[in-house]
Every structure is written in structure tokens, then in C-alpha cells.
Length: 137
Image (cartoon, rainbow, N blue to C red; front, side, top):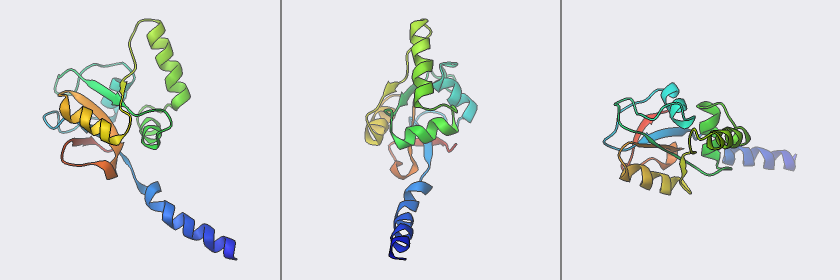
């Protein structure tokens, strides 16, 4: 019974983390919204522009990051292994390079807020006034 109580208590503590959600962020001067399909196209090298026509610069979190896994599960439908294979093929055939990586949420916000046309994703709990939420997938 004591083990069951500990497991229940641990699950209650972990549940706020499980409820966190990823959001797509953009530069404050960028578009106010973007569709899931448009984000997918940007992150899978199918498009190079934001909805307002501005040249896009997507940023990526590192492999193994929980927000990255959630983002790609919801938006591109690919896991880290599939993304690695996809980008290997893109690079090998000369079709493109993977998005530049931001080391963590703070670095992602700094890069997106300082470069017009940039887009990224972070956990919703990391949102602040330096960036604009443009999609909640």
C-alpha cells in the first residue's frame, strides 16, 4: 500500500510537466499566426517563407529535448531517427540544410527575438514578452 501511495504522489508531481504543451514562436514583428501545415513545410524544407512572404529562418532544439519530441510528434509526424534520416538525405542530395539548433529554450527565445523572420518552438511555460506565440499545435 505504501508503494502505491508513493507512485500516486509521484504521478501527481509529474502531471504538471505532462500537461505542458509546446508552442510555435516567432519574432515580435512577424506574422500573428501560422498554420500547422505551414510550420511543417518550413521544418521539412518544403517552404522558405512565412505567411506574410518574409523569408523564414527556423530554429530547432537539440535531439532528446522533450519540447522537440512533442513539436515533431504534433507538427511533422517524425521522431529524431526519422528526422536524422530525412536531413541526411536532404544534405546528401544538396536540397538543403537542417534548421540551426538552439541549445535550450532561453537560447531559442534569444535567437527568435533577435532575428526578423525567425521561428522556433518552446514549452508554453517558457513564453515571455520577448517573442510572439504564433501557433499552439
